[in-house]
Amino acid sequence: MSIDGLAIVDKPGGCTSHDVVGRCRRIFGQKKVGHGGTLDPDATGVLLVGLGRATRLLRFLAPLPKSYVAEVVLGSATSTLDDSGEVLATYDMSGVGLDDVRAAATAFVGDIQQIPPMVSAVSVGGRRLHEMARAGIEVERAARPVTVHRFQVQPAPEPGVFRIEVDCSSGTYVRSLAADLGVALGGGAHLRRLRRTAVGPFTADRAFPLDDLGPDQVLPPAAAVGHLPAVSADATMAEAVSYGKALDVDWPGDGPWAVLDGTGALLAVYERTDEGRTKPSVVLTPAVPSAGSPST
Figure 1: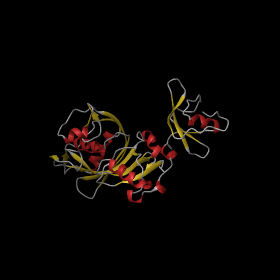
Figure 2: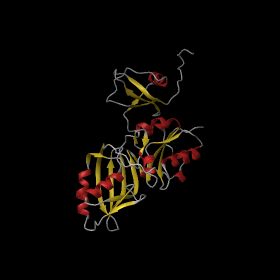
Figure 3: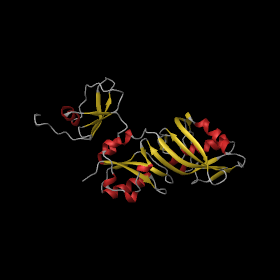
């Protein structure tokens, strides 16, 4: 039987997010598996994996803010902006201290414009940037608006290395923050030891290594949209929802809304239409007619 739900995986380094999906397909014995936000192969930490019908809910997880810890290495710029790439230039930054780095980091807090790195999944002209980068092609990239909520800098055991903690909007590239920080300090820098510590409310202390993952570690579909405002449906509404009907309701806020039954199980996610009605974007429950409904 297919499992529907959300797994919070502590992704190991040295594998892609797609590799994690493949491993989860084998663990749970089902094909319908997807992830809710790519992590670099060398990065570790929180990767949200949807199973079964819950894969349709992953799009509501993509916009959630992210948190990371990593190390910034001053004095060398690389082709990938992290320690997996080729060193392109070196700089003497031995005179840069903790106070200098902290002061420079403040310029990157708030709403900023960020140019995506060539080693990213952003598409330009119908091709992924990382595909072009592997072919030795570099193209102009438009800057994109992102928000950095917190950028804290702490010392690390090695000279010229600083530990950073970043809370940011979805779509922010921490490797670009590291590289731009190096430039702002008058030289260059790259990122290493990137770890994602949270995706919205899903934190690393709730994540499971792949070797420990099984059905008991899977959260119900409702957990995947626990950050959305919830609406409780009575029996009449639940039947309408199961058929995917648009509803004339005046729910608070702008939506989307998680529609739950009396037990707290997720029935559907509804969104507002331009006409002011609410319609389903995802329906998880099959249509089950009530005793008084006509058969077809």
